[in-house]
Length: 355
Image (cartoon, rainbow, N blue to C red; front, side):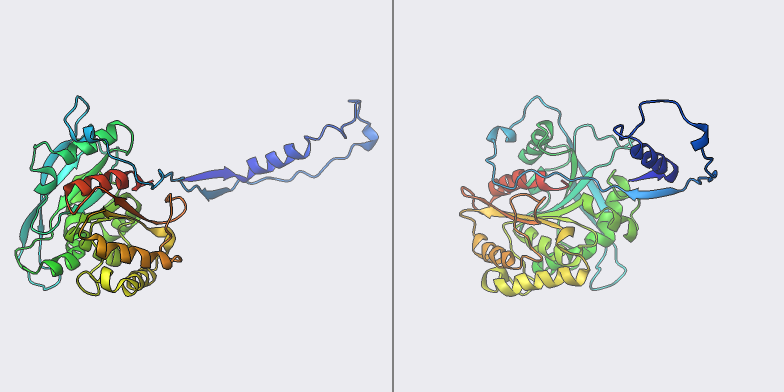
């Protein structure tokens, strides 16, 4: 947003401010004609100066907040809807012209109107863990689930703004290697899923060209659980130009090998910092809210990586509020490697997206 200010108005303001000191103003209102001089008339031309106004983003504190279990129950509040979204993709890495159809399950907040093209929504893409699917979160189109109840309650209570969540899968018909599917999903995400999805739903992308997707990066997030967290770290490495917010739950970065966040934490952290540097972005351009359970089997790999990332504080600025940094790790003490932990971390992390 830009505000235009006339130079004529600025000049007038300066003149008025210069005459505002009344201490030196003569008490008499009589003016001697002998002292009167005629100043040359100067024509004032009006020009317009554009002054950018940066919107202030306000974030809740990052500290862990216990989830009210009643949020996971059906109540008499406004409810969102769950719909199925299909799109076409192909083997973006191996090549070939074969087209495959895939699906996602989408949470649309209460009040979403496909005919209302004025209202825009932030969007999060979220990935499941091993052997699961988008149904693990939302069960199926038109179904009720604890995740949907959670989102409904958070929106109803004002803990987060209405947003769209798109639950996706890394499984493909052309590759059976789960790790490679996770590490390479970002190609499908950018080339196929986002253009199709954000052409249909009312996100902040003015268009779905590469330029339009990049311009709306502050309104887009990616997250995932377990192998979905592996996918999230790979997306962070490669797609900072299109996505600003990340929510990896119960999983580390596998760029240097499976579970390398645990046995090669410093190298993994340095690899991620180098990816930021090579992208041309800085610590001011992204946010990572990660988390796991206290008894989570992924904790042994994720937490060493987190500690190593903290040391690289020119890139990863650990903070209590995203107004002061870009990185936080949430620990749900009572959680394991399970759906309960995902709910608790999402409950804490989602309000920190799109501050």
